[in-house]
Length: 200
Image (cartoon, rainbow, N blue to C red; front, side, top):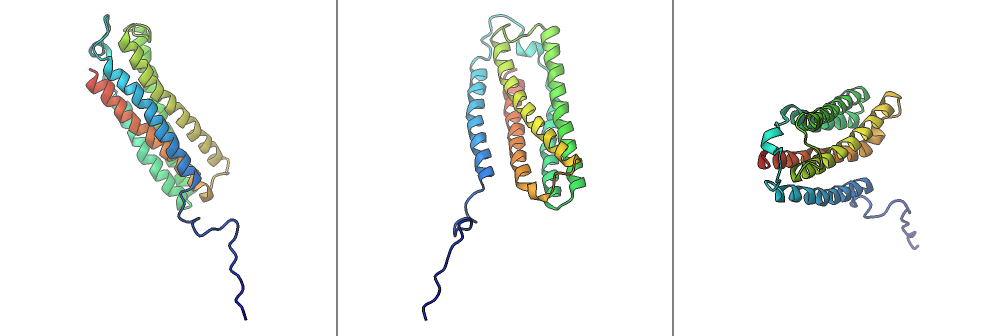
């Protein structure tokens, strides 16, 4: 008697377990694209260092944002703890660590806004003042835009969590968002070294 033919489900294929998840592929593609974009701004900033004909110059007005940097880099740790808590099914711990991540990112943005306010209204540095102003606000502003996008998404997840819509089934989506946040933090390291170390 002939053996019954083996059927393969339309949703389960022999290679389905080895293929990367769509969310992971998507966020990696985004990160690679944004990395190229940021590279252009970093190179432009480095190229124009010291070429401003008029002041103010970086050494005259820039102070190293130590607290802001510590807060933003620390948020990479808290978001990892949040994802681990969600994977373990602890919604309360996830909500706490997720909120801390949001608070640290928000502090970074507040610190950046205060720095810009001082540079504009006290030191007279705007995006049109000189080459330094143009490249500074373009590079730091591009990063701030990405932080704002990340914070908006983090806040949205926090709202879903507080309203009871978040559970361990959403781990993959939250993890994808955490990868974006790690990217934002990694970019800040490059921006920090470029603007506040090399550029001064």
